[in-house]
Image 1 (cartoon, rainbow, N blue to C red):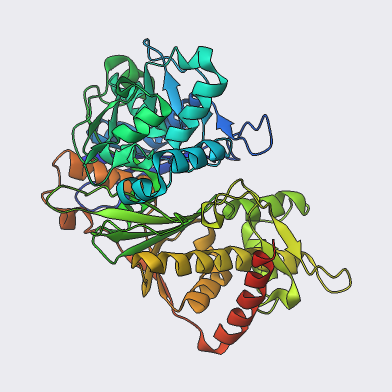
Image 2 (cartoon, rainbow, N blue to C red):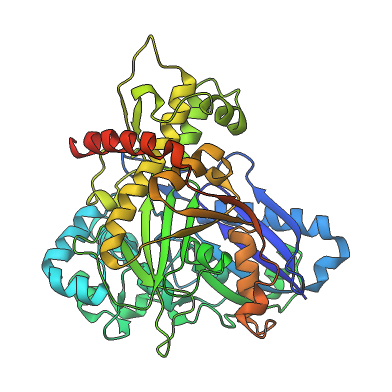
Length: 492
């Protein structure tokens, strides 16, 4: 059997087909080839049209099936990974009511702060393991307050991956992990939080019924099968937010294991079996994909919203003629510390680890007679790495102390400078693997439909493709640069 994985990001939609037996990737494609548009009607807002996701999903799948020819008919299950925390609203006819308010939109921060106080700080941290923050529940509260005529039309509230699955199966469902991702879940009571729903005045009927992340979640309907060029009736058997799914793709499923990504946003994700919270709720805890009542598993997530998007901004605005490899080559000519140039990469909305503040990006210490584009490229990568280090120090309060970081060989982890700086400043070994979110979703589909007899069998094809150890000769330089960077951050 071949397995199809979909990874719905905010920049693109990627599809991959793997051979279930070997785990080898048979076809892969992503669309669009530049980046999907993010609608920002006001500063701090970020929306996307779900139909745009669907158009690019169709293009990515069509590209894969073209690569496979008749072998496309052996695709036997579908897994879905998606950008987390987004709000999709549909009416009774399953039509989208308004554009999706996506993960990096900051308009609902004040609603989360009011709920944190109104429901009670102690209750939120002990039961939700988070403050309500700027997640799906508070985005819905914003719609209820500011667009009451649209709110009244809502039949179901969905996450981006729930909506994609609905288009495929015709069945509106979510997952237990997804409910926790939206901050609807009470970890102590193991059910939707009555206190949160009551505070915001939400009817529980707005939430789709939850299923396990690994399970049969509906079958591909005839019209959609024809639209996608896939076999009719195959199951959607896995769905998860992009960060839990990234952890799955790296076989990070047990307490103490750590996964990382550095795409548009940067994330460190550690698995625990404890119900612990960080006192200031600067990192977040969600049910992991393999959570069960008998074997509790949660993921502690550190997110830096401004990561790869900083690198892409620099590329677009420094001539737009350089490739990322060109930028890395130039940055490599500059010593650690970037000759005193520092960048705070927080230009993509509110930052959870900074107390939901939107401080903006900053370029500090720029000297016209010294610094060049090469310094900017290096300082950007170092600023992202230093942000991760800052967040890891916060995560230690929840018991997440990494010695090894696992990541896919993609996005900023393709940069030797980025890996070196991260390894040196955190003192960790970095292991890269031949996987990504779409391949992980494909493996998840194989687990969910029962094709794999065990999780171990699902990861037989996972291979290490790179190792980075801390360079002790450079650690002191990075540490000195980090101290200066941290001083800048604390001053704003």
